[in-house]
Image (cartoon, rainbow, N blue to C red; front, side, top):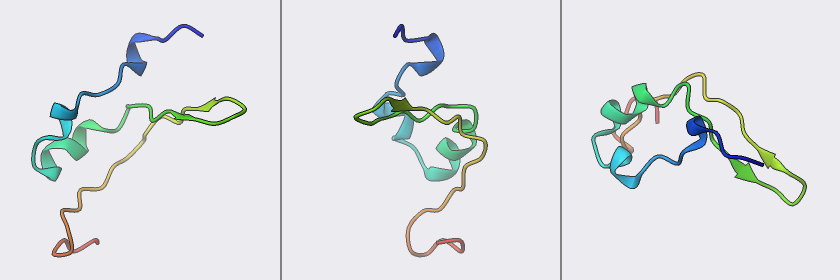
Length: 58
């Protein structure tokens, strides 16, 4: 299988920022999980921004 440009892994530096800065950029990204049978790759449609136990949604 040929990797498409939109399957390029995000660098660790992408997540090296406050949660509210990274979360809005996640929708539209694809998370790939490789299983024994085949890769599963759903496209993110939303993301929450929770920063630890003090966050109201945690």
